[in-house]
Image 1 (cartoon, rainbow, N blue to C red):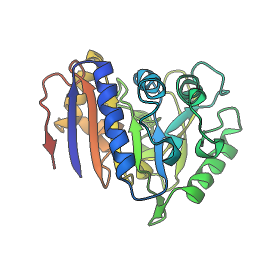
Image 2 (tube, helix red, strand yellow; image 1 turned 30 degrees about the vertical axis):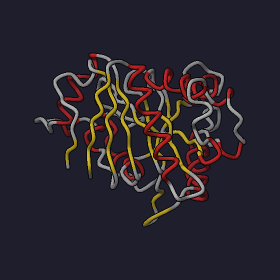
Image 3 (cartoon, one colour; image 1 turned 45 degrees about the vertical axis):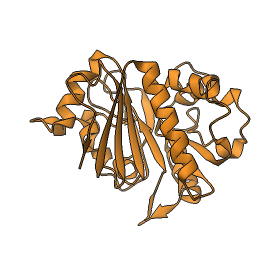
Image 4 (cartoon, one colour; image 1 turned 180 degrees about the vertical axis):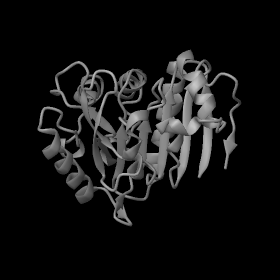
Length: 245
């Protein structure tokens, strides 16, 4: 695994850097489709807006299939829906066939949706050794070290033999569906997008393999391909732009 850190001046600079890299990756692929799993949280909101406006004419939309790394079990018009945010800021503003949008149905029965979403992935995303291979999975980093909806008290999802799993927020107990660790680590590329000083401490522990860093789910993300960290100066404080093996 190759780890690449991209340090940017601020959140907008980070979003620009990521989008330009995304455009390059999509254009480079020799496949007809580029399977991209989006993340939730606050950081992607600016990213989605820039994709829909500043870069609308540069992104090869016809290749990209949109998926989600996790979703809260709420209706798509709920303010906390990951799909809802992406749809409002990005998908509703571009001409994209519904066949290229693969959302987790947060309004559905979790047990049934868990199976349906996994089957849709199996049917459409290329598989290697019975695991899907996404071209790119976007991830965020929680202050507790969680990523997707894999929380520190639910580490079993990292080793699950299923494509999808049911997770619960450790405080609110809100139910979610998430891609599991083996799926995340089977991706061609994984890109963490982080911003703000609150991420600096946890990022440094993970990237330097500090003692007890293994308690953080994000520290277990080691994709077979490349691992990217895109962050602003505050979140990546104390680090230099570099590449590590």
